[in-house]
Length: 406
Image (tube, rainbow, N blue to C red; front, side):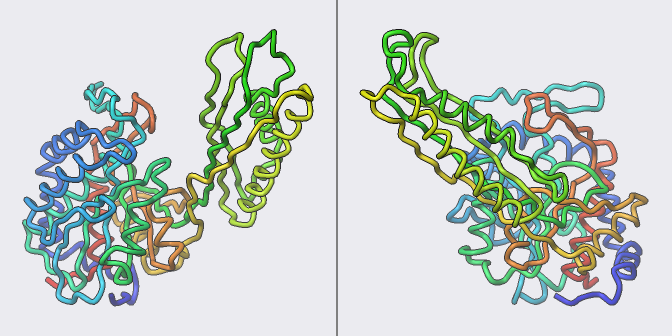
């Protein structure tokens, strides 16, 4: 993949190229069709580790767009190739198949004016829909590129998926070692360019004890009390604002009755920082603090009762890193954004791009146009007005990296 002399000149040349202009017109003329595809995609449940039905649908749609080598890989990712003149490397353009919502979630679409409301309608129904529109624009206008473009619907981007789809793609799949650059389309928006990978570590903490009656067995070590001590200590941690660092106890469970000492309790905890050093420091504090909290609870128990047992499991770890702001891929995305009369904003987040960034592969994540709100809730919404601008930006970035030959 060649590096352009200047990103501005590449974008300006692309803007005047007839096949690019034709693709732009397609985004505008097929706006309603694109929205209908988004609604179809979001009606297919894709809970964590349950993305197969959506992957099969997506594979069929990419095949209908005219892409080749369509398949579902060993991890469950949907892959499809747009051929290029050379095949030594590929440009990956990706969106994630999974949502945060369990399989039983009601996915019925609602409308409120221009807004479409449904779980996952933007995250990442918007990105998946953009992939189909981009693939159709390439094939419909017979756009020729130097570097092949690998379209990917990835699994495991959300929650405990731990980026498993992109980890496989970049480290173990048949395209591993051949990825020249990586562009992820995730959610709505036109200004944001995610070039920083927000590192995180996620834990499941389980505490077990003998349990008993709240009156008759008072003095038995209580797993919930142990977790309470741990939560209190974590809440007092002096997380710095710079480098920005956060922690969250996202789920707590345990117990069966108000008058029963639980035999087991658990919590799931998310730790994040833009600094790897600060994340390591917070992680060490957290693990040390949890053990101390359980020891403190054990110290209060009656001597004739057994102690609590602690199980601390790392259930997710996302690498940090950064694609430099002055790198060709970031500069190209900035120029493409400006060309559409928007102001580029560089940001850091946790996305599929974390993995290639950590591996040294030039990678960014872009919004796919339109506007959205209430992500990760059943009231998530997406407004498709001006979606075409996001699609145009994505096409300019994609063709700038893959090198237009027409």
